[in-house]
Length: 317
Length: 182
Image 1 (cartoon, rainbow over the protein chains, first blue to last red):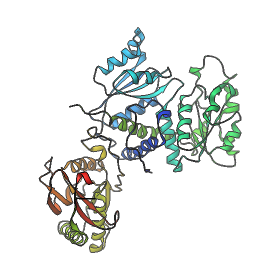
Image 2: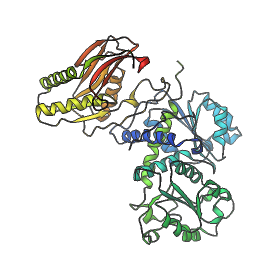
Image 3: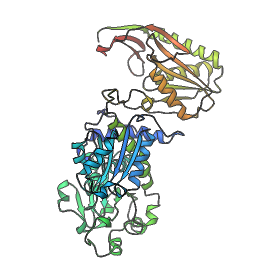
Image 4: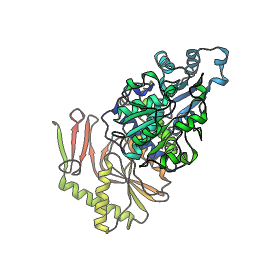
């Protein structure tokens, strides 16, 4: 699936958001991920490229799959890895973000993969520290590697992203995945629609040049691919819909609904799934879903990003 | 392109390929347990030619793969831009096989070192041999020497040896150029 690329490297030493990437840079990440996917299917799934690079996974917010995926990608590249979680750290004692990270960097760390609840936190960090920063999700802002693996999974299944119709369904307002996906899909030439209850659609959303609908059936009849998002109850301080049961009734994707369409669409979900709320189990586990492909591709795409960014760390000795 | 000197023309290259094939046949007879691995990016054309010619001589298909060494190189982070990986295509196990590594030019030996590293991710071969079309003598950084050589040449660091194949360009041939003109 390797593609012709004109760009040989990423312009920035950081990956803070999809907004900053060009289509050529995304294609470079994809074509490099192709080769890493090949590595991951070999008996020995490891290459020595980053054997002299140390990476800190700094997670100020809970995460299972993203942290595991990054850690596995780093280890497959032979990097040294340290993990930091705010729940068991001096952050609880009042230490600032910059102090925390500077302390980690003083231990000779080359790259920082950071998740933070505040939008813009990795941008702040990138301005103040000497290491490469990868945004592993900043609040409701961006989650660039998730968008890259999502679009890569579409690319892998269909051979191209351009011209595909993708609907993102659910909690758009609280989703960093939605924003990064919209940027990535648009840059690669896909048509994008968002669908969800009006209370979960941000006011500015139409300014991004995408279609909006409140009607799930209309969205599914329009699209080739439906990316179903998780209802992020932990980010909702007030109630945006009366009940999960009502949400599931109007915006839940189930087999009966998909079978009533005149076509077969591909279903994606960034995980973790609230089974029975936004997605029923018979869809999540069906052949129409490429959810586990997304997870597998996540490691290859993250290896690609780490490899391309690490190549910019020059040897000083 | 100035300073471009042809050192091996198409006809001579053809004779060299023929000789290399017969050297392989002397040591591997019917190739029951022998496979070919062309090194990306340019050794694959050499491997294609050798495989095609062996097929013509022996009337049998010999397993051939393409091996990319990018992720196993030791100069990552020492270059101005990252290396772009090529496709690795090895559809067979090399466990307990005789492996012939093929590359167009042997220079410092670092690519071959990386290839040995990359190769063992596909199994533990019984024996590994190295065949190169051009051996740039006296330029080695590592103690790596070929088992089969098309032609050994004396070159200096400011020169580059360029092997061109009909599949990529109009004609087969080997040229020496100055690095500045390539």
